[in-house]
Amino acid sequence: MKIKEEMKGDVLVIAFSGKVIGGPELVEVKETFQRAVDQGCMKVLLDLGKVSWMDSSGLGVIVSGHTTLSRAGGALKILNATKKIQELFIITKLITIFETYTDEQEALDSFGA
Image (cartoon, rainbow, N blue to C red; front, side, top):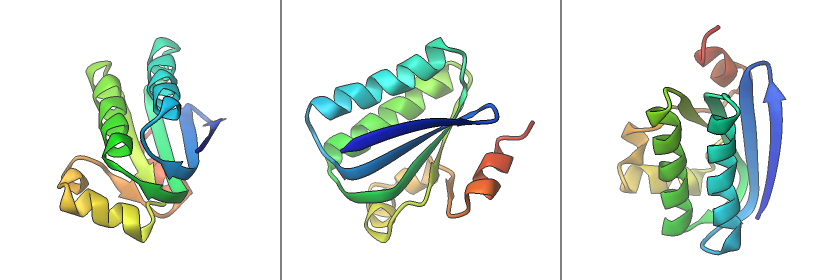
């Protein structure tokens, strides 16, 4: 799994690529969310468009990131969830927790000014 971070205005866009499964990378993902909060970045857009697979550990770390940001007064939104990932969100009922988008500009605009 690879992680790419990019600021777009006041929104941190984090893009994952590859397989989001258990392992040391997930520690890095948790640290990425915590670092965003520590730096005062409360708007995070998670781009999952290049994720080929995600297991329960991957879902868990995204939920953890959502919790970390929410407790700090921030928000985590999902961009470009693939069909497989979308199905995982539906099966696990996480679709009711996350705002999901397929258009990056729409997702960025949804955070407001």
